Length: 92
Image (cartoon, rainbow, N blue to C red; front, top):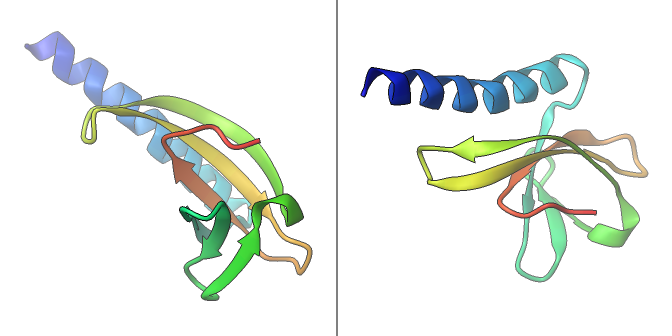
């Protein structure tokens, strides 16, 4: 059981560390992927059509809390809003 706990902590920590690193680099907004394919910025309460933003995948790993794979993306909009999207699917 101890080996599983160590592995779980390490994998979850890699996702967390990547998000913290990106926030320190100025990606300070949080985005949600909506059912209609738009992205919603939590800080500005603004929706962006997915084809109007720049999306780059930065990290992926298995999240033992939700039992799913998570992908960490950076989002850059045309009006200088930058942030992070954490989702179960890879966005291109």
